[in-house]
Image 1: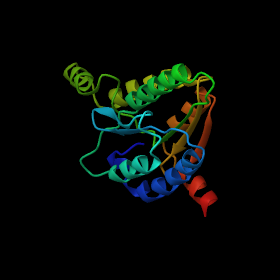
Image 2: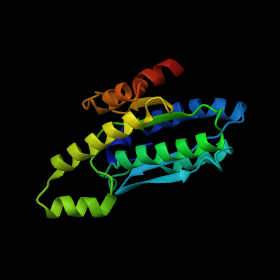
Image 3: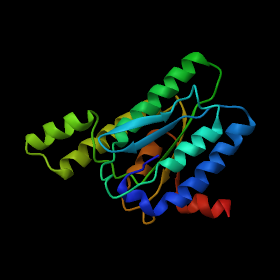
Length: 188
């Protein structure tokens, strides 16, 4: 879940879509994890071990309100965290299916390494464009690692889909792609 500043307008719709995703998890007694994506690094808010409590996942989701202080989007770190959780879950439950849903506008601007990587790139004369390019390339690499290992869905939170990264990642991961508007329309 991208909770960066650029996703502020889509918060309510994301909550509706996420509730729809959580409903079958609850009824089928499955597990869920929630990763928050903003700032210099992504954070596992609820891991798959506590994720049987769907109410807890839903509660934590409502706490992820984007605001203006959250300008950074560490999407590569979020994808890496999701990949690790999926691999760990698959090892513990070899016959289980793993599904990953990524909600973001695709404006990744923090490469793996978080704050230290940001400092290094900026100290070397890099700018916001070089950070975004590095982060996007890392996202592509991580999406390729997810291909065949998990069912992935990439949901673009940008109304105008101005970044093609989410669509690219879905293609690379052999996953599905939706705009948030399409999902909300389907739910209504």
